[in-house]
Image (cartoon, rainbow, N blue to C red; front, side):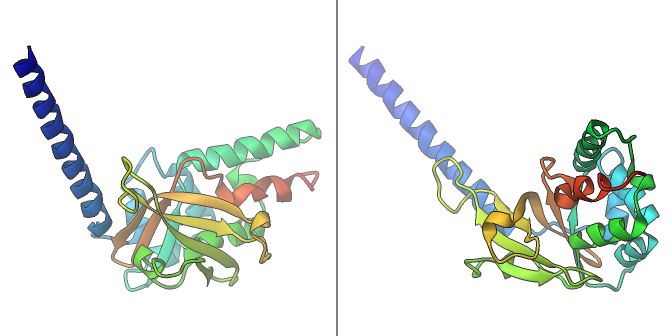
Length: 225
């Protein structure tokens, strides 16, 4: 019995060590990965039906943004927002409107100037990768496209299986709301970063992100439309 117990302990020890080494390699490799897409940022979204349909609709409403994302010789960075993020924003907007006796609104009903201002917060007229943030301990403020609105980018690495600095790399993307105080900021995290299209980087926000950082409700519950 003692011999069997010894063999069992040795076997488990080898398994644990092998698993840890495999996990370690996985996370190291992840941080080094450089995924490319042979097409523009807009082309990428077009190849993802069921994931970015609402974003494609938004770009049809705002052709200037669509044109920029479609230019093969541009140098851009873009935070991608999926269908769930748009659904969350519209749902919250219409719940708030219902409480004050207003009818529902959808993307195509919204004021285009306001929508343009909100949509351009996700677009930057330069290529910014996660590597550009690693040495910036407090993050970096970048001016977003067209309206030069301040958005804050911050590097974060999650802990994976007890391994510090070997987890998923993230960008914490924040609307600073024209304030230097973090308590007034609204934050969202990326689920993937640095997808390199021919005209820039795509950083994908998680499904928990609400499109426009909740500002659809702020803007479109003040009108009788």
